[in-house]
Length: 406
Image (cartoon, rainbow, N blue to C red):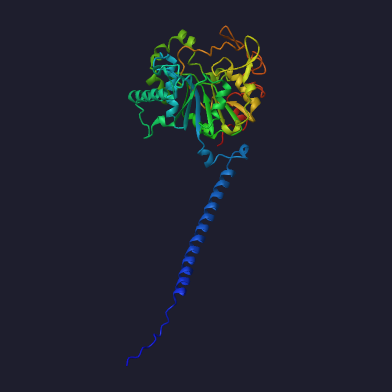
């Protein structure tokens, strides 16, 4: 007869096994959680230490806000207006200059987005035959071809593996050339993705100095007078686009004093006239919801009624600045053309908007800018400019606590 003996070791029940497993899992999860919390606390302490160090080393006039990593990643958008052309349109010489300037800004690494509001498009007009229609589609095609020509003719063909046209946004405008007020509204639209906006005439080309725009203080409005265009002053990195797209015939006239005087394209407006400008730089948030259309009007030449004005009218920049001063809360306005350089790709015959409505331009001759948009016919001397006469001239950025974060 076989006897069965009970084993001396006691086996745990299934229920106790489950409880033991849950305890072990919970223990390891707890250890993992507290280790991550410790790492996060250390990271936050290090981040706070770095930020405190940045705050302590900042300039005395920027105590409320300092340039930090968040500012470094703010996007900069360039906004301009250009007129559409049909496939049958005869190419005006200045159009090629504008296309060269656009390409220079597209290639500029300090500009994150180029937004072109293309006025006069006819793509949606059923009364226009298909072969005569124009739209952003044609603009993209034209700029792609111009880019191809540039790469063929220029030694600077390094695109860093990125299609330059990928940073371009074109917007169809069927209502004609935008007024100054509309251009500022365009800059505030959702298609403009930048935090900081550079708004300028389409024939303005920027060089590496535009990198300072990313450090612009939020309460400062910048305007820029152009440095003109010359073989000596214009950087080769900018001039190469003009030479490749338009040509170098201008070099033949460089010693012709009468030709230079007649065209005056090599005049450095930053030095001779700090009260003339073609470029605006500002934070979008600084003017969001503040612009008032009635401020962007001035007297008509025929009836003295208030009318809108355009970017290429005589004295329009002065009227627009007055409107901005009334509509926004900028602490100050500077002409920072000594800090940021713009180059005018406009060597061909100069024209202005032909509305003929401004009392500031009679028979094609520019007359003085009246109050409140300007002042007296005779402007204050450069060094003795009154502080109540914005924009303040170059170098006042440095005197008045600076325009940019360090």
